[in-house]
Length: 517
Ligand code: NDP
Image (cartoon, rainbow, N blue to C red; front, side, top):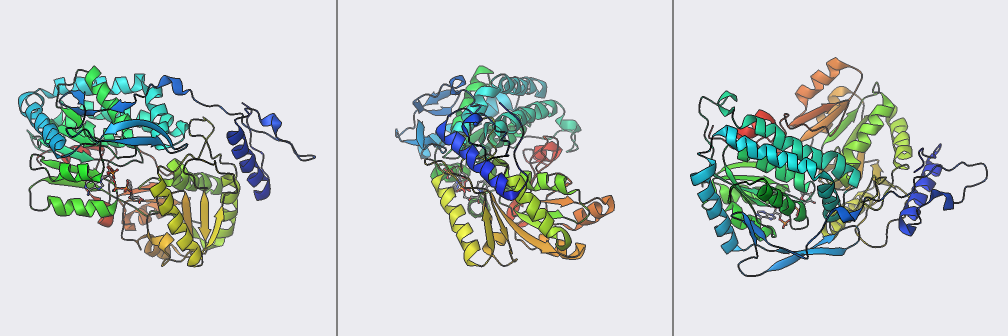
């Protein structure tokens, strides 16, 4: 692999992106096949695909109930596909009401007979075992995640899987120290947790849900997203290998009706949901008045605010990471760039040059920065909102790269000339699309940043510490990053305000969501 990136102007950068895509398409394996223009030196990455052989995908998967895999009671299945190629990966059982009943009943029995009475120090051993297994099988998990989700392998390898393991390690440490967590001398678990997770970080969201619940002494029934069930099922296999008592963790694959049956099941004591605000509201209605404890981690439309004294190159990296990480399928994505007017042209120009170096293509290639969109439905949604952006008068710039013919793809896109009333400034696009707005004064930045029904996250880029502290107090967002973006740590609580939901995941706060406090 040769290093370096040819760019000195946006035009040259665009060619780099075109050639990169051409390389991925042809699978030719060598940058030397690309013709250089006279006087232009070309530095290219040769393809570096991760091997698929580390994963063996079965043709069919069952539900994980009471410690064993079994077909759905009514035999229904659905296909899960690779969004980068549309190739079917496997068929997966679709859980119906009878399966939800069986899983909740298995979780109840395990809760009463085994998990809740077990000393915390013993529960911790299982969590440590799961964490170590995740580390040992990290490559397998990373490849499977990229295949099923479409995200670049370097992200699943360096972010999703290590953070998932870190969550189990972190909460394993709390399991025998709950009485020191600040929730009174003897905090009690809630019982059976019904947990519904989305497709953007499939394994990581499973870890965010399972690890604190188990550490606190609850048992779980987890419903992964329909388009990304495979790593949750591999995690179920890890639970088996770790000797986790049957019924402590159950995994029910299926669509939205499976999730709806789970959250409204009378045997569930606690509901935890991550996903769209729309479904979050439905769940809140279903759970209202039942006495079930509820945490909702929903959408966002975060402001990433760049002041004129910010270190520009650093801020550019933060903007790219903020919105193009994971194809922008991130609830806390910095999807609204608020940039101070005096530096707006410079920032947008440098941003486009930087984007021209991004490589879009095969998610399993270690050089890939932008992978596939997770599903056709999501691609349709991104297309619909970007078309609305153009129709409402914003100026669109998309990375001029060649998109693979099969699969679901969308190029990194920046809209300038965006006003606050545009849909692309208000609605969660959940794709690689950035809306740029400008401001003149810090007060105006605050007003614009807070002009959203959401309140999950925000970013601030400035040289002045005092401004960071002033602004962080004024932003209505659960997480505020300063001179960085999209940093996660299991010890740090995460969650939102307003339409971004309520409750916190991560840290000591994440335990409270699973304790009777
Ligand atoms: P959903 O909110 O529909 O899906 C999240 C999870 O909830 C999935 O497991 C889904 O199952 C399940 N589910 C769907 N309907 C119900 C229901 N009535 N009761 C219980 N569970 C249910 O998100 P989508 O995948 O449809 O994405 C739509 C939009 O939501 C995206 O475009 C994006 O804007 C936003 N989103 C936000 C996320 C975030 O982290 N904030 C994550 C994912 C999406 P199934 O997969 O089978 O439909």
